[in-house]
Amino acid sequence: MIYITGDTHGDYTRFTNDAFPLQMTLTKNDYVIICGDFGIWDNSKIENHNFDFLESRPFTTLFIDGNHENYDLLGRFPVSEWHGGDVQFIRPSVIHLMRGNLYDIDGKSFFVMGGAACHDIQDGILDPKKKDYHRKKARLNRHGRIYYRVKGISWWEQEMPSDEEYDKAIETLDNCGWSVDYVLTHCAPDFIVEGVFRIAEHNRLTGFLGEIGRKCEYKNWFFGHYHRDLKVGDKFYLLYNQIIPLPE
Ligand SMILES: [Fe+2]
Image (cartoon, rainbow, N blue to C red; front, side, top):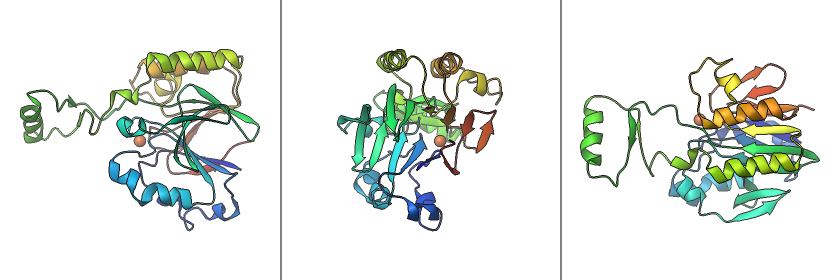
């Protein structure tokens, strides 16, 4: 079985036995996929029980990355191959599915393109390596402007894909003839962000996903990021707290 859910932000209580009793019927050959903002955030969470808790679950956890991940930490895990694509093993059964890859899982193909632009940074991004960092931060705090993030501490530029990751995505889709079973992303394609949610958030990634949405064949597309559970049309699922079985 394959289940899918939305952003966890390092809080895995939805996977306790009480919250997700169906897991009692699952094995490590069954999967729960998290659509980004998984919660790799600080060293303590890598060292401590959070990922060990996931490892202790009877299923295998797969996650794509979102905008709220510590990419410096994530980058420390070696890249290996799993089910046809590149992955990073955080634990033996806690696995990062990487941008631009296609995986064969239980005979179904999943195209993955994680990442998103933070939308809670109206007050800017501060760089602790810059001389005026403390002065700028104090001024923002003094004026109650709390929607800022700090580079390398609460914001990473790798939240958005690199040129190489966009190229890899195109190459992967070229190789499979732009036809997959499922698409997994953190943010949504532009025609949903702007056309359905009416959010003025056009960026390179939402535009790129829009192109994929128009050109590629897929049965369903799952994404997170907007912190709601909502089915959009016939094909699209915005996921947050719900854990849903993969539609047949
Ligand atoms: Fe999130």
